[in-house]
Length: 102
Image (cartoon, rainbow, N blue to C red):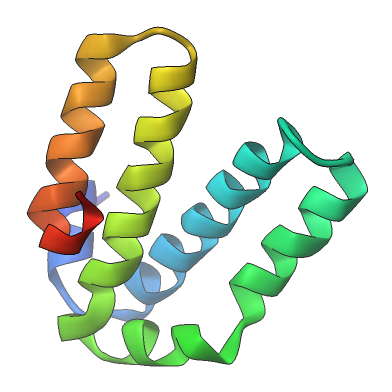
């Protein structure tokens, strides 16, 4: 089984579906804190199938936007739970993926 960073580094089908799927699940988790679970699931599903995500999935050069969103959401989750050290790591990864994540 290939390592996860190797999969993310290559442009193949597994990585093209893995990053948007995980990003959509994290969006659902974030929205469940403030919205009804059904509304959060609908919003996460719309995030997953939005046509704007076609470019990051099809082109490896644009995948950094989804990675920045994924790591930024994980940063918010860790920060809300009071895990300062781990939230700093997620923020560092988000900024490393794309500078505008800051």
